Image (tube, rainbow, N blue to C red; front, side, top):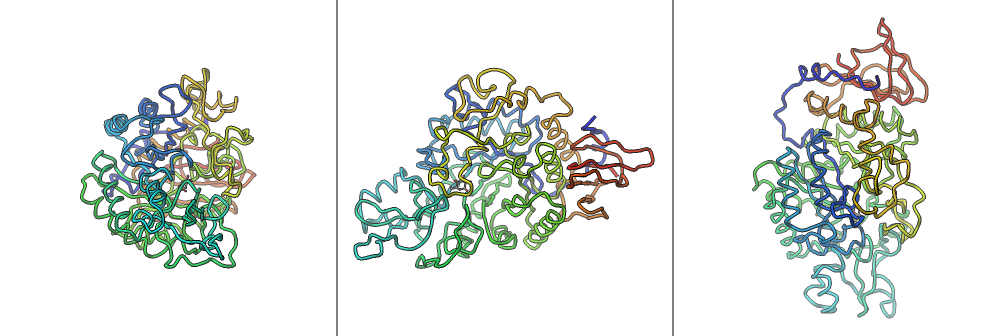
Length: 537
Ligand code: GLC
C-alpha cells in the first residue's frame, strides 16, 4: 500500500508544544471564486465555502486564509477593493461572512482574511471623489496624483512600470496622472497621508471585531514609496512583484506601519496574526517584516521559486531557517497559490513529483500553506480559451506569466454532475474533463490518492507536534540527489529528487510515503525516483 500510516504510533510520539498556534499551523488558502458555489451562478461564494468547511476540518488543516471577498468591481479578482466593510454581492453578505467565521471556529478552524493596503479599486469612494474633485483637492492627496512631464504634461511623472505590464501611471481627464503599480483600476494609496493610515487601522478593527484570527497582507512590501518617486533609470524589466531593490518595494518606511498594526492585533485576545506577502530581494530582508513588534509570518517565496533539486532545496531550507531565527519568527513553506503555476505542473514531474514535494514541505519546521486543489493533485490548466480569461495580467500581456487563470479553475467535488459538484450551475472557468477522476469524491477512501496522502500527512503532523516545531532540521548523510533529515521526536524524512531509484539504508519504519516503497528485511530500500518517505525512527 502506498500510504502506510500508523497513526497510533505517531500519536504516542506526539509532544505538546507551548508555542503560538500559528507557529506550526497548516493554513489552507481558499480562493472564494473557485472553491464552492452555493447559489449556482457559476461563481464560488461564502455560502458555498460554509458548506465545505467540514471538508477542511477533516483534511486536518488549522486555519483557512480567504482571498478577498469584499465589495469590488473585480478588475483583479477582488484585489481591487471598493469597500472593506461590505461583501461583494457575488460572494454573499456580511451576515454570511459572520456565519462563516462562526462555523469555522466551531469546527476548530481559524480564519485569516486578505487585506490589500497598497491600493484600492478605482471605484472606491475616495478615488471616485479624488477624480471628481480635481487637482489640488484633499482626496487626491490620499493617492499619488502628479502632473506629467513634457511640454504639456503628456509624459508620465516617472519611468515606473506596472507589475501587470505597461506604465504604472494613467492620465486622468483633467491632465494629472495617478500611480498604479498594478492595473489602472488599482490606484496606489499614498501612505504618507494620515487618513490612509487611520482608515486601515479602522478596517483592521472592523474585521478583528468580526472575529477573524488574522490578516494576509497583500503586497506588504509596496506601501511606502521612495521619497520624490525617483526614476528607476536603466533597470531590467521587473517581474511580477519584482524581487529587486526598487523605489516602490521594500522601503524601510513600511515597517512603522506594521508596528502600529501589531499593537492593534495585540489589543485582541486569541493571538491574532499578520502574514506578509512581501517579495523582497533576500530572506533576510523578509525577516525584517517579522521582527517581534511587527508581523508574525511571511510567505517564503524563495522556497516556492526553488526547483526540484536536492542541493538547491537544502540550501533554501537552511537559508530560510537561518534568516528567521534572529527575529524569532517561524519559517513558512509554500508551493502553490493563486498567482503562480500550480506546483504539480511547475516542478515538471507530474503528480509523482508534486506528492514528493508536498511531503517534504509538510515535514519542515514552521507553518505551511496549502492552496486549494493541491491536495487533489490538480495540475495547472493550460490552453484556456482567451474569451474566458479574467486575469488582468493576461490582458496587459506582460505580467508574471500572463496566465494566472490556469491555477484558478474551480474545484471538482464530485465525479459527476454539472461543474463536478462545484455548484448547481456551470463554473466561471471551464474544468478539464479529466477532473472527474481528480474530484474529492473520486479520491476519498482511495488509499493511493493524493487527497488521502494529504489527509494522512496532516494527521501525522497534527499527532506529531515535533514536526512543525523548532527552527532547524538535522541533515543526515545521503547519496547525491537525496535529502535526508531528522526531526525531533523520532521522525526522519528522505527525499529522492532524482529520476532513478537510489538504494539507501532505511532509517526506521515507514510512516508514510508519497509512492509505493518496499523495505527489504535487512533494512535496505530502493527509494524510487521522485519519492519522499516519512519514517518513525
Ligand atoms: C498580490 C495578489 C495578486 C494581485 C496583486 C495585486 O500579489 O496575490 O493576486 O494581483 O497582489 O493586488
